[in-house]
Length: 251
Image 1 (cartoon, rainbow, N blue to C red):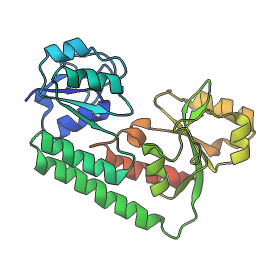
Image 2: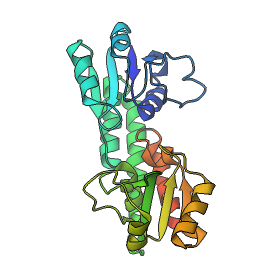
Image 3: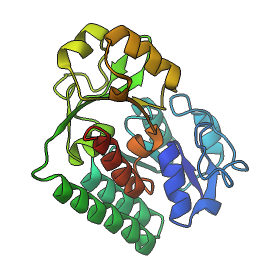
Image 4: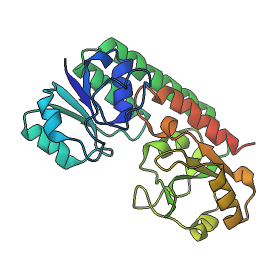
């Protein structure tokens, strides 16, 4: 089987399903597993894949994500006779279903079921642990200049809310709304989580926000964006990681 993956988390999933050797094309952002992706041809980025080259590679299936990838690229591949599997999970149940669907398409049902069942069992545990406990207001920042955050209709927010968080930007109409220091002060989240992707927040950016808000440094945390936004075989660990992030607000 010949597979092209245009989404980093799906590239990782393909390897964890035991089909990594069948990947003939991935994006330049596909960095995991680090010891295996180096030798696979890069076919552009998530937003600008090389459609002609992908068609030349004659894949049996191209894996895409409806948020990471563009609809027009999926349509171009389909028009060229290339099979496309597109998904966009927004939470754990949808991620488990996606894993089962991709595993079935790759003839790896047993491996997919193990990952999906792990997602479901960890999600149940975290939800039960959060019941009856005070909920922690949070903001999840993904970009700087301008500051951008995530609303409730996002994968990261779903993981954090499942663990007992309340997204203070959850009601925004835009999935990734711009925000300001003034709005942040008004919403007053207990935790401000600064993701390492897509913008690479560092400790110096906490210094910047502490100075701008006057809040104590403890309210700001750098968090691993891969664990909180990659859906697939990284999700079981991401569920536990999201719980640990919310627990920072209880300290």
